[in-house]
Length: 307
Length: 279
Image (cartoon, rainbow over all chains, first blue to last red; front, side, top):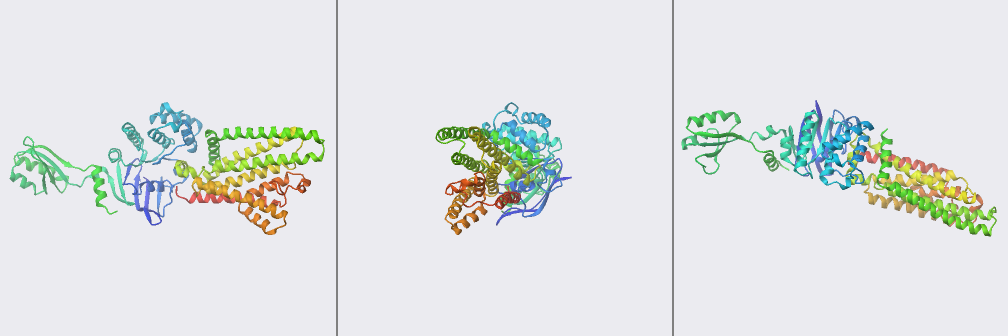
């Protein structure tokens, strides 16, 4: 079942096209990472999915309903990118107010609010005013309010912005918890390493277009380069490696061990390469596919795709 | 019901922001100053005139209207101050995003906020005006005519300004909204004077100018009608025309209906604009 679906979704502000022809599907229980440089249309997309921004054309469905419909919004949690708080409210009052807006009764609010504040590391600060909170603490309370209604789908727009490394780790843990509970998470983040370790699938947008979508594995395979660390490599063996692709020497041998990079057609040739090297008298210390990190892939996509 | 929920939160927000306390304390200060001033005036006058004489009616009624006029002006300023930041400020700060992504409809947000502020404003007006009339009655046993109608008209005047401010807030930034609405109120205020002086001088063009502006912003017209209703008929002929309580050109009951419709229409437009805009 798809919790988010868009068909040719487009948003233009006059001549400026923020999102163009977005076709996206996010299934139940997925943690979906939405990546892109500033101004790529990520926040506009989230806003359209939440009914905050009206699309110029195309359509979107969230929890099988139109964005903004009350029945859908009752099951959605949202942490905006620039979450601003009424500074005169205490953390508890703030959560209580949002609990009321979600339609939780007083008993549910009394039970749920302390649990969530504890979960985001603010257990002892429920009576502190939000105006006294640091940016990171405000982000935490924002995250807590997004989880008040036991959501089926959570939109997190830069949830770790302003958090210290410990805070970022805790948010990753919360996202993992949500996934284990079957909650779908739509995550906008600039922290690529964070997306890499938390998301099941990733979409990359540039200039309002979705240019890549898939699992992190799917997106990062395909560079088809393997790393070989071996000794006893003769000229003839090295020349023979070219039958699979171009060979790149990576530095001078250390203790007789040579490091090579070999472009191949796919990972399936690894066993053949291994047996070729062994038959040629080489001793293999390492033979592994080289995968680009999500960050490397992102940088490559940004440079390759037209704006 | 979500509208009541939002109204309740808006009301609570006024308490959390200490607005409610400021209104209560300064409202009490206003009543105290009025009581002291009126008591001494009454004491001195009663030494000169027989307190039962009709001659005493003029200054007493004038004092009542002056107090009511003070409440009317305060209610307009209050309507503006509590509402300019309500929707406009929340859009600018982004706090509106967490509100409208809850299981609410946008019209419920606008109506709820309006209702919360309208109840607060109306309470202020009713309590202040009633207290003021009560103070005068306690000291003099004088009750102005049509007190209820007068109070309701002053409340309607405040609601006109409040609704205009809510409407402006759906499109304009907070500061610009405040400036526009206050200037519109000023326009209606000066047009009210032009209408009164025009009527006194029998200048039809001036009267018509006042009426046209009253149709654009019917706030001042509500005060004029309240002032007319709350003074005994014979006082209308005592040269009060060139004061804020003048009744040389009195807005008709039809104008009251128009102002009520104006509030409903402005609110409907506010809902429509807010529902259609990107946040």
